[in-house]
Image (cartoon, rainbow over the protein chains, first blue to last red):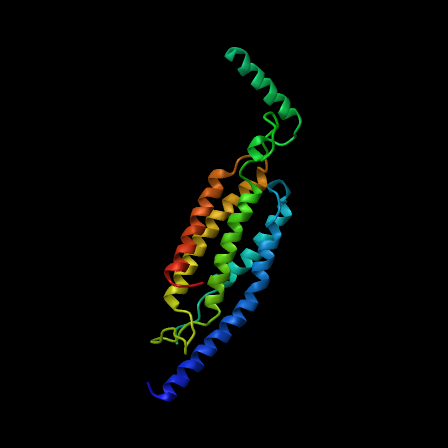
Length: 73
Length: 138
């Protein structure tokens, strides 16, 4: 493999890693909030309000996933 | 002797039950305490959590941006394949439509057993997770 190809491959890997880190940071609050809401609670302590909060966050994520795809380029 | 021991055991168990207000079915020691909804909010919340985590992975994947026609994702070209996003959307619709009746049941019947509704939702969420793992989306 030519040195330039190797450098290009490394650059590509770094770009993807950076993208993953950025996305991970964006998603982290969702994950943390989802876990914090119910983790550690006894079944009787999970309130309808807890569920409402979870469902609101989840529905927002689902709405984002369900947004129409852009036209093919 | 054996005839006496069984009633004595039952009495002992009943008395032990009086000492606790929590059913043995819920980690307590009472045999007579009312069982609060054995499958309800907590179980629904666990399924919702699993669904939420699957959605985070799916949304993160979609946020990569859709691959241009004729290209595929790679280290140098991180993007989301259109066909994979369509699969994820379909699995999400199925999971969400299964969760809606479970949510409604738990909300309207907090003291009834929601096992059937939550089990259906759990199965749909599991299918969603399968679509994610099949396509390497994490």
